[in-house]
Image 1 (cartoon, rainbow, N blue to C red):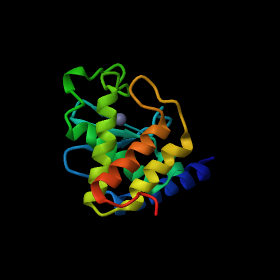
Image 2 (spheres, rainbow, N blue to C red):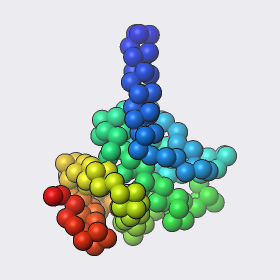
Image 3 (cartoon, protein in one colour):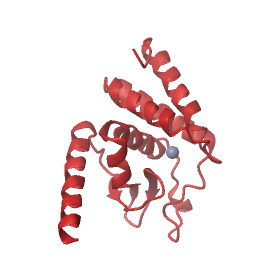
Length: 166
Ligand SMILES: [Zn+2]
């Protein structure tokens, strides 16, 4: 069992180093792995300041490119002022109940704009493909994932004049 835990830890460290090559962590927001997090990643606050909790196994499963899209989405929530510290609930730090559908769409758009600015089409393709494949119906704040995938592709075309998949 200890060997298994060691092997998983090494895999996670490798996955983290792959991610680091794509994603440079902006200062001020700490990225904190939480095993069994219900979502891939969640922007929130803790006692020290702004954080992004992420599910390391989930991120590994979707791969480093889709993970980089997800992280840009969460940074979007922070950088667009969606995560309001006074609403942070110490009893339930992984809930983003105050977000609304406009904020979720804006965070997707932030991620697209960010990766366009970085010239990294592959990350945007991976994010949209992940949403297309997951094909979920969404929830109170998230549109159905295939609509999000289409919105991402449409915004990419608006920003670059080229189709996302070509
Ligand atoms: Zn979000």
